Each structure stands twice: as C-alpha cells, then as structure tokens.
Length: 191
Image (tube, rainbow, N blue to C red):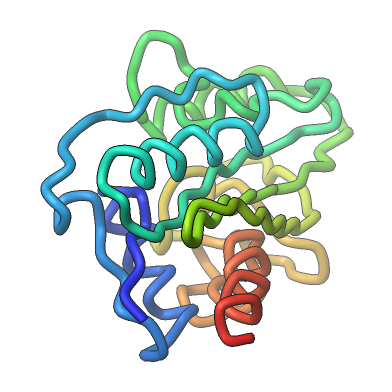
C-alpha cells in the first residue's frame, strides 16, 4: 500500500519507515510535489495533525497521514505542548534554541516530569482516524547524546537513565511516543 506521510522532515520520515517496516510504501510531501508549508494553526496536537492530513487529501486526493508531536512539561503547565517546534519565538524549528529556553525555564525547579505525545491523523478514502502515543519521562538537567532530533537530548524516558539521544534509534523507535502511535496506525492499516 502506498501512503503519503505529510512531512518533509527527513528524521521523521526515516523513523516512520523503520517503525512500519516494508509493509507500506511511504512517500513524503516532496515525493508528491507538495512544497507548501501547511500552517499548523490549531491549539491542539489533534487539530494540527488533522489540518495537515486533510490538506493533502483535499488537494491531492491521496490517502495520507500526518502527525503532530508535543513535549508537555508538568512544571510549565504543559508547555511547550503544541508550540514545541517553535518554542523559542526568535527562531523557527531551532532545536538548540528550544532546548535552551526549556532548560532556562526549568532552572532550579525540582519537578522535571514530562511526557511526549504524538497524535497521528490518518485519512483513508476521505474518512479520518486518529491514533495517540505517549511516553512519560523527565527533563534532564542538561543535554546529552547525539542521536535523534528535537528535544531528544534532554528527554529521559521512564525506566531509563539515558536520554532519547543517548539510547539510539533502535530503542527509541521501539518505545517512543511516535512509535506507539504509528504501531496503532500500522495495526489499523493491516486490518
């Protein structure tokens, strides 16, 4: 089955392909000739995922899925949440600046509890289905590790003493929020 993943993020595309295996032909926005930066204007992860998948289905007529992911930090009342990719307002999708802001805001705060949530919006033949994955953990005091992307160097999943960036792709792709949501997606597609 060929399906569009509404992203041009190479890291996400690779991660999704590894999680889904060879059962599906996953193509990116670039592969279908879409170079539009689809605006994420909703105030929820569910809404942003829906906006992206609906845009592709409505404009290209292709079965597709899109995701939105947020890091939610308890001590910051759920920040950065839906604004995770653009948490530092002075930049656009700058992971280093986003992590620096997060660590500054948490400086001296003993409550480091956090979770990553991913919502996947799948549209097949015009009908939407949503899947959610979540992983609980905590925010480290400082960055560590070089694997992964985004907040991976500061997020330590529950049950581990290393950040996602230190655990490596194989472990992350087995336990991550995105892996959990995509496994539900795969189970649905394989029905």
